[in-house]
Image 1 (tube, rainbow, N blue to C red):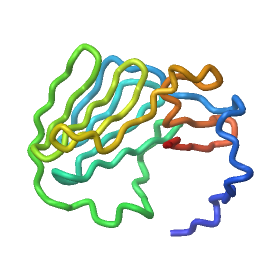
Image 2 (image 1 turned 45 degrees about the horizontal axis):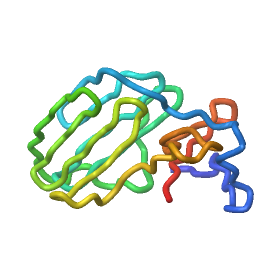
Image 3 (image 1 turned 90 degrees about the vertical axis):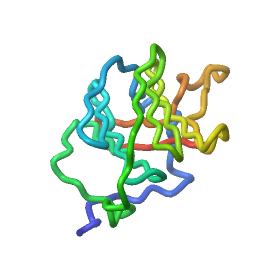
Image 4 (image 1 turned 90 degrees about the horizontal axis):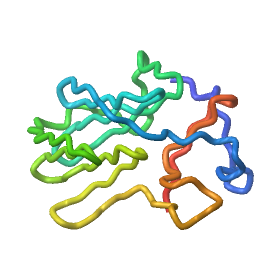
Length: 151
């Protein structure tokens, strides 16, 4: 795979808070295809459970998922997974028996639990007036850039 089309931006040049980024916003419905969940928003991520302990989040601001390439995911066959799906009023909960993933509806945000222990969450920026709440998975449609902000 040729990665020459990717432009590297060093940390001193990366400016995710200058207003050119768009957040995903909210969603109300989803479709499930096997172990994959497509959030009904435009654009929206695809969340796939590759095993009981591995979750893959794909995002393309054009909603074009016809190409499935990743430098990070080299093997998608990591074992069987049985999912328990609960569509609640404020979040979609997907339980594998090992981890539980909560996908907040308004606005989009993702949290992962192992038992009762929180092991990952998108940061709530409600108290930061310079950023929107849950300034996490963001994109710039003008420059075709994507960023996933974590603290």
